[in-house]
Image (cartoon, rainbow, N blue to C red; front, side, top):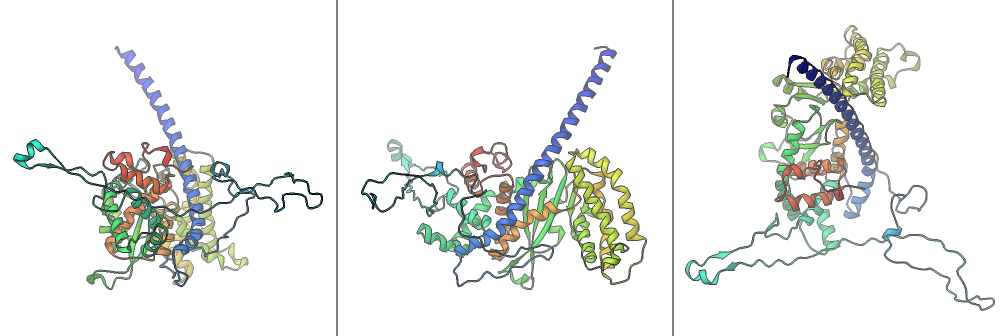
Length: 519
């Protein structure tokens, strides 16, 4: 190839590369939109399920027992419980996606008691029909499998070496009554529906007519969590190396009822949530730690290269100092909330001149621009350019209002301003990275299912119990956000854990059968 041909080929490859970059940017935007919409729908569903779960759980709880209030993080809003109507009329949009006719197992004709006309005596004929459907609840059933384990021997060889051959069990719980489907059933009821072990034990005895103590249920789940730990670790690794290099983080409290003697005085422990961005496979990692020591809680993030979107927890500041490859994006929604609380109580006549109102207005404009970018389907690179042009001047105005004025010490606005000033540098990371969100709403939404279930199970019995709870909770919630049927997916994973690779069993793997997806 001569020089002219080589230059021509280089030019062709440049154009091809540009086309591929444009295609990748479009795909990034499409992934963002799909994940954002899915996350919104899941969030809306969780709000409804919060009310529904509490009511459903009451079926498992004796009427004499009261659901006590749980430990709630002050930054989280918990909706008041409301009663769910026990009857639904078949009209409007109710049940519009359910094909009643396909599920009919019996047809009953309701006719008048008289067979003939009471006036003339002739036989009555059908004049019209009105169809309605009725659903009957059939309790869960128990299928017992008898397993006879046979050892074999060779009669000819046995005289010499007395050698026996034993079968290899395909069950992950050899020697136990626990099957893969039963383990999935328990995990679903405990970690998806939030049923405490002692109530689940009573329910299983009543419905399945077999006594399994709460201690045994806990042991079964610990064994299941240990088996699924490689899946959990792979999910952590995938999150650590996600394509957008962005992790959203949040945390909530968890009480531990039985603490080691050295930790008797500890009042609160924590569950940390780490989630992928809208540009990646949805992954939710929940991680329990008895303290807030960042050296322990985020040890697995020490080699992360990218942006962590978080609140003002000082542990992340330390993490970023120790690892220069980590940048922080603090949540602007937390800042906005503080100024909004001030503006709410201001007299109408003084709002316009208030610095709190002006700051809140600027922050509102930032969020407005973000909404416009999403509406116009901008790629991450385009978002980055628009942010510099649209929002950098607003950020400069915000800096002026925060840093160039003296506010009355100990006043509400001084507290809000000091909060914003303290994290101001970390509020601007998103300006130069189109993959980074302005707020941490994604993580706050992802932590919510744990908070909802905590309203029922209240505490964890031990540190070990809390750790295997978060392993199972991570897998279950990631399966949910990837639109999988939780119980069926867990059974599938357990059935195939020794046959397929971990990568094939991940909730977001392309190898997962379509039959495990929700309709």
